[in-house]
Length: 414
Image 1 (cartoon, rainbow, N blue to C red):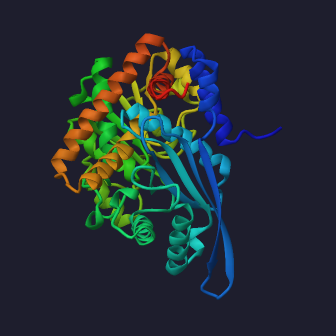
Image 2: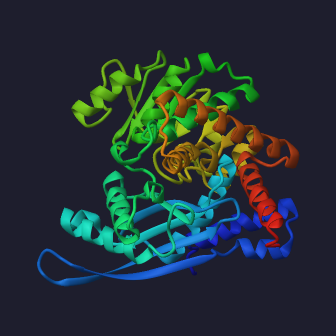
């Protein structure tokens, strides 16, 4: 049996969405494929003096709404099918967020953990030089992804500036503040999720300021989500990391838990808390559940045991399609990753706008604009949810695809 690739899954999701929308077959066919996929071979002189050739990709799916946008990942498991799928998903994520950008994604097949800082810098610069003809502030704007961050974006920017003999900070986002980054970017995904949680709670009649919240995963997204939920008045009763979880029905002070984790390297052993497993956390009695750890955590095996009224996907793909069906029938609202995760790309968009204007906003302005954008995105998705009588995941896809298709029609593409 041939295993489905991420690209196969992306096309299946589009097919399902097209059926609900009664999408024109010709437009549907166009949306299945990226506009362009560039493969590059990058010879790098390693520290031992030998030349090693790395393979990299840049996939550009659809730019009907605006320039392509999406991260670049460094990982030994990168494939062309994965990068194509991720570029498609970025098109929908930008669209559902209501930002004027399309979907792109890049990757290099490498293991950065086995490379020196010098080797990584040479690889980063040569990769960006190789794709420089198809990227730029008005063409395609890369960003950090798996195993990349501000350091790599600074190298990308510098290489692009050298090649084009100027200063073009808008060519990448996720940069350090000193060279054109945006305030509020580090916590943007968690903060965006909290705004979506507030709006979803209103629709479900949950008293947000008294809601019990359980968060699986205490990385960037999970920790910031917990912190902002607490700021809204919610009671965070359970938290977990890769080694297990902690539970206290009276709630935690998230800052204190963060300090404990930084000192001890784990949540287990936190004073006054009952130790639970990651699996137990998902099945706790709570109002709001935030799976912010790994994919495929909520499955057909445990979906029926979940007691939360509202699930907000902090991680990518934490809920399987089978679990989606069970939860939808139970009346549990699952707000999908494509919407809840959109705070990150939204503040990347803000960074790009600030770069183009050469005018930078204060932190409060970034937060205010993100609040408005995420609120509008949730309400548009909820409108599709009520109109088509589908789950929130498919509602988000319908909302995203409709916007892209409308732009394509207006431009005469279809």
